[in-house]
Image (cartoon, rainbow, N blue to C red; front, side, top):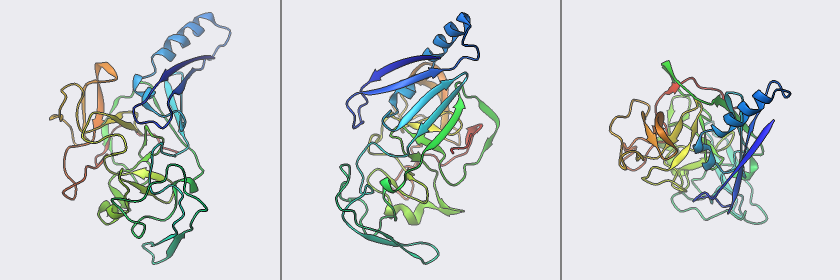
Length: 281
């Protein structure tokens, strides 16, 4: 087993210095040739993975697959961290759900601005103590046909939290839930804290990396690094092929589409998977 490490300083991270471990596993630990090949393979892990916050996300290279595991927690402030204000919400079935007041505010808690305690969804970020894993090809390829996204997580953001599509429920558009989103267009749900719209905690009308979608392709902000402006050749899923800040060779990737939703928002991923999606467990 070969382990190499890369240290970097992300622009948006709470941590000052983050370390990401790249691990390549050999099928034959006694083979010197395999050991050399593993060393070469570990160096080929995509440079974009260095953007992910390793306080929340672990990224391992296992042969030709990349294994990503996260605790689902974001690395930035939100009113959805535990706090001393009790709030209630009524679900679609008419049930009242109460989020109890904590004894003290979480260090990353901030007062709601674009939402309010009355409009916020039930549950706090730190109420969710699970983990999420995604395994994707080291070099993803486009599929012969696209696949529609479903409810739940469709990707993992660089912050550690989940990426969702533009639906709030089965055939229920996000429209009525927009009021519950915090300043970075996220809220809590049945399983996790997750983003629906442009993630303004670290990306606002720019080319920054948002995260990875479940088919293995990366998702970037509204602008393209190759041109410095909004791409004009995006497909129905917001994808195209060009260089990025993480690659000198052209590769397929997604962008947040520069099209307004409800006259003021930008949906993270409103299209279909263009690759073969894996399940986020």
